[in-house]
Length: 117
Image: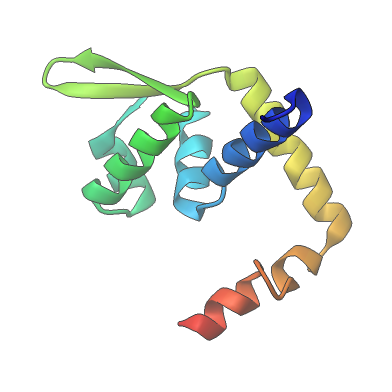
């Protein structure tokens, strides 16, 4: 049986996994500017429609974005935008403090993903 603390850590891990893809972060940052349709996001971010749709579905499942119908399209917006922007700002502050340490991490850093390609 999971303790409350273990359950909270598991939920936090799932939340941070939602932020683990650069495309999802780009979508969240773009939605911080206001509501967008998938077609707008694909044009602004240079991503394929299927990629944007897949990541929006993930972000929606995580409760980070919501959508509403507008004609034949759906318009996406951030849920809890103030808390989300606070979290992203805190991440930027932490990244500024750690410098290159995160990107140099042998397990999750960019050197690992670049050597795998």
